[in-house]
Amino acid sequence: EAQVTQNPRYLITVTGKKLTVTCSQNMNHEYMSWYRQDPGLGLRQIYYSMNVEVTDKGDVPEGYKVSRKEKRNFPLILESPSPNQTSLYFCASRDRGRETQYFGPGTRLLVL
Amino acid sequence: AQTVTQSQPEMSVQEAETVTLSCTYDTSENNYYLFWYKQPPSRQMILVIRQEAYKQQNATENRFSVNFQKAAKSFSLKISDSQLGDTAMYFCARTPLLGGSQGNLIFGKGTKLSVKP
Image 1 (cartoon, each protein chain N blue to C red):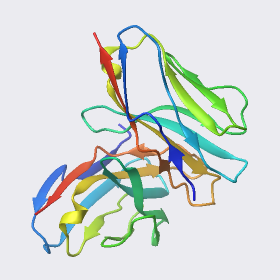
Image 2 (image 1 turned 60 degrees about the vertical axis):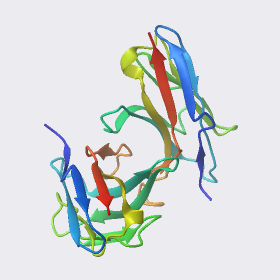
Image 3 (image 1 turned 45 degrees about the vertical axis):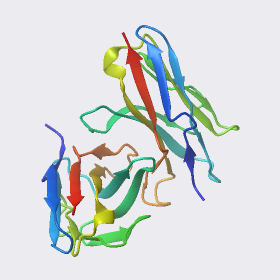
Image 4 (image 1 turned 30 degrees about the horizontal axis):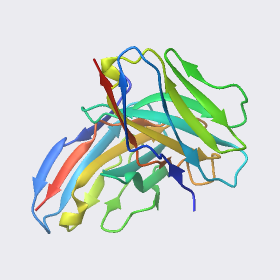
C-alpha cells in the first residue's frame, strides 16, 4: 500500500530534550516536506527536500533541522524543543511533475 | 504575500442538503494548482479535489465539486447530499507553478463543517 508513515504518532517531552520524528514514504517520491498545524493558523511548511541531500527552509524553520540521506526518509529533528513547538506535525511527499501531495497520519507533540 | 483566505471558520448543514465552503487567494502567477483537503477527527489529511488553474472546467469528484473563478481568485467547494461522514475541518490550499517554491502548499486557516442528522 502506497503511504507516508510517521513515528511516533504521539509524543510528550520536556523542554530541551532532543527528539526526532521520523517520516518514510514508499512511493519513490522525490519531494518531501514537513508542516506544522496550529489552531487558527492552518498548516505551515517547516522544511522541504527536493531530493537526497537537497533541503531548504520553508516558512517556519526556526528550531528545526532535517536531513535527507535516503530518498524514502525525511526525519524532523528538534535539537532543543520548546513549548512553542507544541503542535501537530505532518510529513508529506509528492512525485516530480505531480502537484498532489500525500500526507502522513500526523504526529502530535507536546513540549512541557 | 501569498495568502489563502477561508472566511467561514465554522459552518453547519443538515444531512442530505448542500453546502458551499468559500476560499479566495492571492497570486501573481498565471498557472497554479488549487486543492481542498478534508481533515476528519482522526486528523488525517485527505485530498478531496484538485483544480488546475489553466483548466476552465470545474473539477468534480462524486458529491464534491468546485466553482473556480480565476479572475476573481475564488475557489469554493460545494458538497451535495451532505453525509454525517463529511463532518470535518476543510482546508483550501494552493501551490504555485512547479519549480517556483518547490510545491509548497499554502493553506487557508480552515472551515469546520458539521453535518447534523
